[in-house]
Image 1 (cartoon, rainbow, N blue to C red):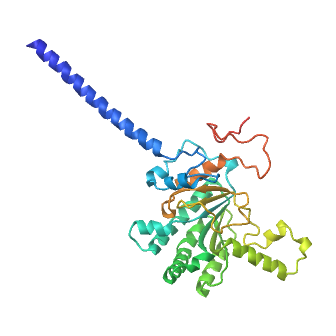
Image 2: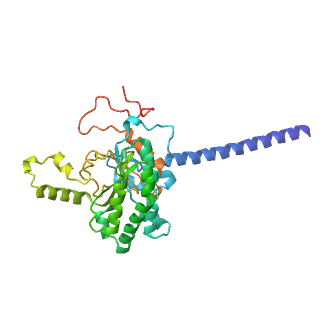
Image 3: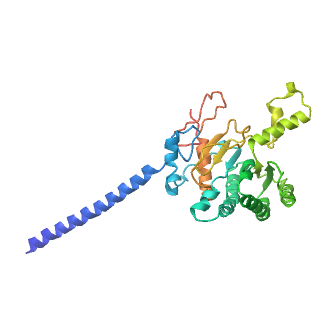
Amino acid sequence: MKRSRKRRSRSETFVATLSLTSRNSSRTRRSARTTSDEPSNGSKISPTATSQKPTSSESRKNMTFSKSEQVPTPDHHEAVCSDRVPVHVAIIMDGNGRWATQRGLPRLAGHRAGTENIRPITFKAAELGIRYLTLWAFSTENWRRPRDEVEGLMQILSEVIERETEELHRHGAQLRHIGSLEGLSPSLQRQIHEAIELTKHNDRIVLTIAFNYGGRAELVQAIRRIVAEGVPPEMIDEATVERYLYTAGMPDPDLIIRTSGELRTSNFFLWQAAYAEYYFTPTLWPDFTPDEFERAIRDFQRRERRFGGLQSAPVSLTATDPCASAP
């Protein structure tokens, strides 16, 4: 009788142990599948970061991932190198309309949600030591959208200026505008000028809003001004053209971020982006967090920028310490 109980006890213990092992194994397999589905930052073709031209089939396939798989949790153990922080970062803020549609909301609700990102991203940029941040809010092509949406966007810009200017001013942000003021109401133009005037002496970060901006329109107006001022053809060089751009006096962008998964420049900074690095993410703009912004900066600091030449000691792209240059 005692031997029977002992054998039964051992048997029950074995079954319990086997069951627990099976459950743990199942969890491990699920965890492995989740990990393997996440895009790798080291991949040449990745929806979260790329400076290479991706193959459309693989990239578009990756765009269907859920948000948790699209944007892995940032590795806070990896430092942002202070000596390799980009001077100028520009962002194509895309995906507001899709963000609203996914939630059954009007498109303007997505645009309003997107404005909530301006302050935290600006503060994160200033914290990292970035000197210039440009946000593209409205393109010259956006006038083709339905009239109620365009009028709503103008109203949202007015509200944002009223709501955010004082807080940005207190934190040392200098506000600028690039693009044409043509087509904007006199009251909105006045708000823009007042915000610029209020913050013009701030120097912690220069926040430029590209509103009613288009790269081709910018080049056309630059050419017209050069011709109108009678500049001799033989005197026109790259420096001359740059003096007539909206961005005169600003450094070219080192990094351009585009949200929402679109892989194109869409008429943005056609002249200035000649040697910019690009970071594409499937994250829609209202969901783009300061953590992912920092991830984009860490990705940038791993890249080797040659500007058409060669570097004798390139930065190691596989170094454990991204702040350490290759010997």
